[in-house]
Image 1 (cartoon, helix red, strand yellow):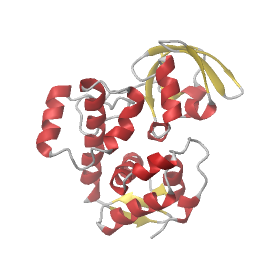
Image 2 (image 1 turned 180 degrees about the horizontal axis):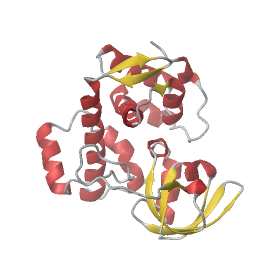
Image 3 (image 1 turned 180 degrees about the vertical axis):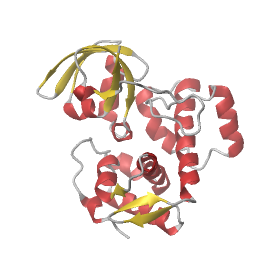
Length: 240
């Protein structure tokens, strides 16, 4: 089955370059699709083709092939105009997302890879992390609650909770702690480099100065920066 909405324009993120897209395997896209499906599953909603197209800025055929694979092996099923995780597929999604985010943590915390690079690099590790390696990573990393981008690691006993989390686009001026960026923005290398260079990354304290025409002026832990609307919409903070 091809979801027609996968052909919808992707206007909210910068698409990967042709070279990067060519290097992206269907196996890696399967994990990205599972991340989106799992997020919707936690809210009890189906995922539309338009949402997948918006969230995963790669050539349509790769997302379509990933969806086809998940439907064929029973991990996901069709629900109305979208797809949902099956009962059997939910544990598979949790395992895949957990291992992907643990791999990101390993690359960042243990190997010191630059923050903006870890998402795409972790995709290259698809299928490499076994049960034994996962257990060892949990031991070495101390069961981290989130990936380096602030997104929760399924199954962690240390998942954080935030009482006043809000998107940067809606945040009022004042001091904030950067909480997370969405999986959508993880695919935008240019946006990640902007956030890293100004020090506006998860776990850091910063300040929202003002908003002008959708752009948000912030004081990061490194320097001030003007963050464009699509970055502000996919970055979450907590005021303090």
